[in-house]
Length: 132
Image 1 (cartoon, rainbow, N blue to C red):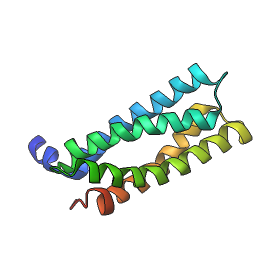
Image 2: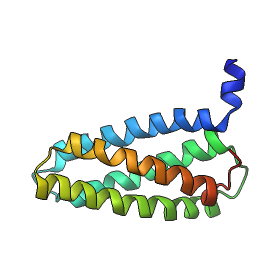
Image 3: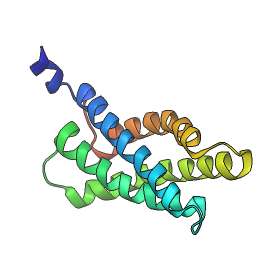
Image 4: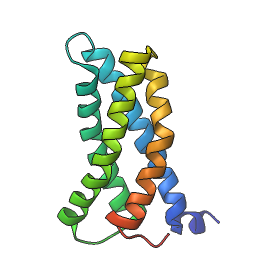
């Protein structure tokens, strides 16, 4: 049963997505706490997204979709997917924190749901052309 689960790219996507979410969320909160007095919220979100995108690409390529070669091509495709997701995330976080007044923890949590769905379909249909 465990072997069947690990052979399922959908299950592996959930595991990798969970890790990537915890990593990106934690990184965002930590960077916000450390840099908020000297750096604009949008720039903090930008830095967080760059680092998180690299982490996510590696986990999806190696662990989830298990594609061989094409590192550069797939990385650039992933950047297109994550670039669009990052723009949405950065704007939403900026609006929620700076304009609406929500704290960073709640703001980031709200963006997770939207970005997970967009990322999954972007990677499945574009980055890795996965058959999941």
